[in-house]
Image (spheres, rainbow, N blue to C red):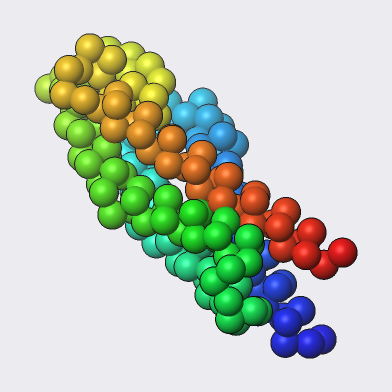
Length: 170
């Protein structure tokens, strides 16, 4: 195995985390846990998982993709480098700015839905989109939708990276 093949493999594996982890957490595991645990037990661990995913997992993986891309070529001109940069930038914006605000606002809005016994008063529909209480006017919906926009940008960068990297092989 050559050094280039090793770096390419590491980059592709790290990129699979960038794409696969959010898909798993939000589209497969999230709905299954929600159905199994119920809304009131589901939200606290989901908030912690989201914080872990965005703060560490995606940023480290996207940075590793960019690092392996630099080790492959040492150039800033390759298309795959630009796509990896877009993915890392989107992950950083989410991790450092948007997700902390969205989680904080969503947690506050959700806590307003509990009664004194710790039971959920209202159904908090579409937590990822509405950000907690759909009637909340604090901007949680906009924050949560902004997270989704930057995840899509991260996906575009990641998928573009894989496509351009594999296209360069032929």
